[in-house]
Length: 167
Image (cartoon, rainbow, N blue to C red; front, side, top):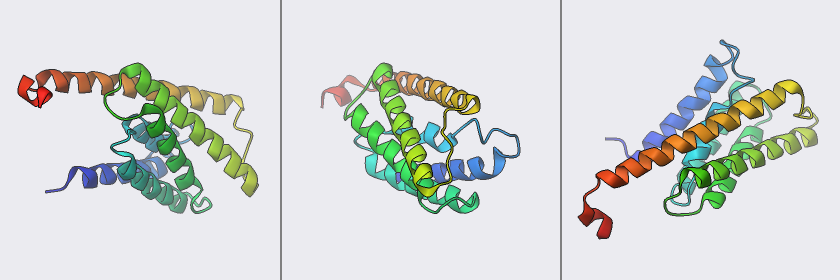
């Protein structure tokens, strides 16, 4: 039986493979950043180490499969996860706090990508109309995932017996 952490790492690697191979075929690779949309709403203090490892794996896979400078995407994803986990903090968080943490992580990841692309001399300004559309779509998906995550967690807490909640 796979542990929960191993399963999370496998799913994150699968999203990187989907981002690199499937999304370009249906022309969504420039609109959607699937690994970030998965990683940032999950970011919390308890899962930080697992998600940073997943971000590193996903980033290296994307860099290798898309012929990018090795480590650039991994750095971007890791920074996003760390900022989102720090902004969300520990314990349960409502949808607003989850959303703000995910958006802070996305902003940090976008700034890191912009800075690293500029330093490597391969980047764009990131503020063309297509890029703004991409940021809007990803931000909307992050807020939606945060709302779903908060509702799911609230449902789990309601279903637990009172003895588990008190002890």
